[in-house]
Structure formats: C-alpha cells, structure tokens
Length: 188
Image (cartoon, rainbow, N blue to C red; front, side):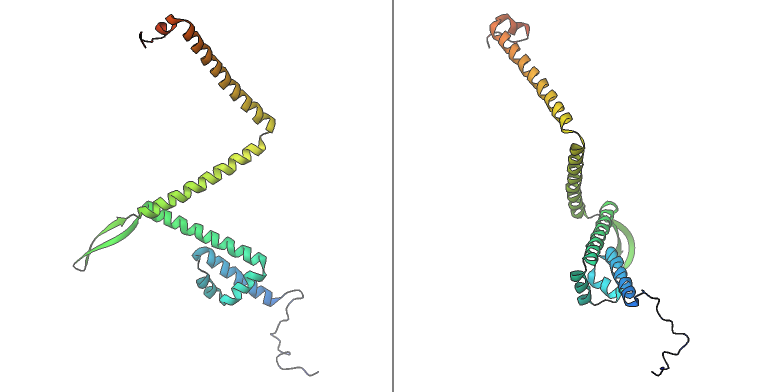
C-alpha cells in the first residue's frame, strides 16, 4: 500500500493504545455541561457553553444512567445555589437607585418579604424532615428493650399519679372537714 502524505507527517502522533479520543472529548463536553448546569440551572445555556446539541444531551441522558444521575445532581446543586442567592436577597435586600429629574439622588434597599416567607416555609419543612429522619435513626439505634422500659416507667408514673388523685378524691368524699382544710368554701 502506498503511504499518503498525511500518514508520513512527522508531527502526527498516533493515539496511545486503549485511549479513545472521541470518548475523552465526549467526557470533557459532558463535564463542561454539568459544571455549567450546576451554576445556572439552565439546560439550554449549559448546552450552548459545552457545544452540545440539545437532542444529543437528551439522548445521552436517556441512554446513560450515570450521565442522567449526574444531570439530576447538577440540577439539584443549581437549585440549591439559587435558593441560597434568594435567601441572601431576602436577608440583605437589593439596592435600588432613586432618580429625580433624571439625576441619581440616592439609593434604597428593597426587601422581598414574600420570597423570604416562602423560603422560611420551605426551610421549616426541610428542618422537620431532617428532625424526623434523625429521630427515626436514633430510635433504630436504641435497643427496643430500652425503649420499652422507658415507656413502662412513664406509664407507671402516670398510673401512680392517677391512683393518688383517686385516693385524694375518695378521702374528700368521706371526710366533710377535708374540704375545709383544703381551702374549699362552705355551701358549694
């Protein structure tokens, strides 16, 4: 076979055995897409930055479970970042310039109370879920026998208090002077 001019060039380097340049290029583009997605939460913008067609992205997502999982993780990170930015704005407000007759005369700080309340509501739900998960984990770690003994102790304390109250009421019914000694008013 005859050598072509391209094959005989000294600057052409053959890939190392086991190296797939196409796979490396794909991995680099996927990594770029995922990194940008984690920052922006925008699939379209991240695809453009990575130089990947949307149809290719969705094909990769549908056929590659690892890429699909990384996609979801990047989106979750992006939304967490967005939530932190919104929380920052809700806490510190956003500066707005004031103009009078076309001249800048001052600056005010606006606060978005509606967003702040929504974030608090979401955070309250998250905290409740975390606390419930922690309580469940703690309960699983604590032996069932210890939990049962603790419950029995509480039941016994309530039972003793109930019986003492019954004895006090019975004594009050049997001894008319008992009501006077305990501060009851005559004629009730």
